[in-house]
Length: 355
Picture 1: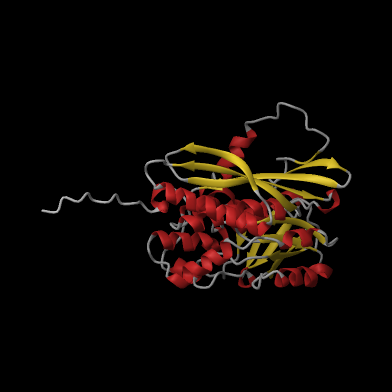
Picture 2: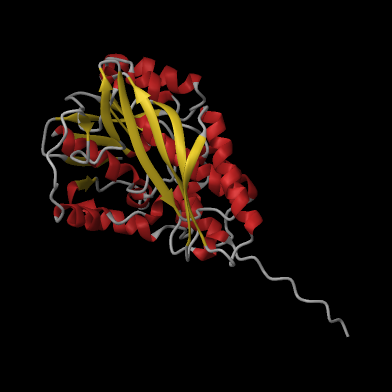
């Protein structure tokens, strides 16, 4: 009789969380209700250039006439099962907010919550190593952090960066006639749903990792262009949700052409097979009243445009004269699918989606 002990089964990382990646975000409508109930207890410091008044990507604090400090934090539960990839994705996503404000990252702090005793210590080490690898690519150290023993695996960063005050780009400063450019294709949430169902093949997984670990480095150069008026990135609220933040803050209406919106290869087919997320439906419930969908849109348009993106692309509002240079910067830094997807115009803040 074989009396050798049975080795413990290591659970899939995605099985330990009720949501994954930026799909973990609190639904936009619920978050809005929560924030409305909290009035500031102190007057706003004059040096605080960007706070929470515009739902922007990061806070910005003026240090001196030549430097502004950009500070942000982002963390979430596993979107993939490979611990090294999870660490890389989470770190890329957190650092993206620095680039989305037009800054250069300078350092990070790690935020770690892990179910000690449920997953091996080697797995946790691989998650941290993944984050460190991305920070090294961004040229910054992880200078410290904080860890807790938690029920679900959580990893992310506090990221800090610097920019010249004149190069800070907010998400509420778009202008009438601005062209909308999207830096990365959509579909990460759909891929994640397919992965959990073992329906994402190796090629699809490779595409998912390539997009989610691509640092949004064009942000710094884009912010130095005078014709780039507003900048943000697309994450958990989907393309429509983050574009709505631009529209509300700028007092403008967007027209988006669905046929021009880039999608990750294979994502439309996955969505057609039923691989969608609950976060997409929550997103639509939170802001769908502000979006007008044309009658001739494909059936899956709403799902794709509300799909929660983890480490998604930059969203740029720029003058028509600057579009060529914006696309050139994206192409030079490896963002081959960056595309013009619409325009901003006068009107009630909201979005019209055309076929």
